[in-house]
Image 1: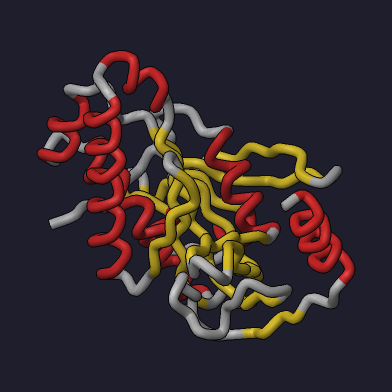
Image 2: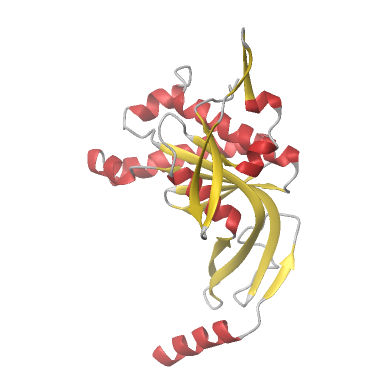
Length: 239
């Protein structure tokens, strides 16, 4: 077995890697993905949602309840994202990737609207979801948004046909980096480019004083470069 593993790693590292550009978000059953050096690349607006303090939730409850909470988050995300034309993929147990294919102003705004609707369902007093989850102290989360090219590969075993999808790209890293820096109640953060392309209905609130910017700026270091981002505590009502 040792020799087989070493040979597989050698082949993986030394063989050419094929990239196919696609216009859809891959899933595990995509026939274009295989257990070889091949990936599918697509452009997308990337939303990363992270459930926080799961270790604390587990300690206060139990592992069955933690899984129920993860499932509940997933149900909230799927319905909202599907309605806005996005695609949901699991990043890991406590994180979800959401892809809106393309990097147009429309895809950017739909992605941010989805994030704001998710926030409404999880934090607004008029949401029964919020009331149910807060019993278990399960409302600490963050959502980061960026856009760019995403590479998807499939790893696993050809004999068992079991495979997992791996996602990579700067947009995913930046969306994740933004999410990790957000503090309650500002659950949503977007990159500078995403913020620049937001429509007024998502960028401003209206009051007697006129339009008020609802986003505040901050920054962090990524690959030795300063990444400016914007964060907000606002939401979008779900009817």
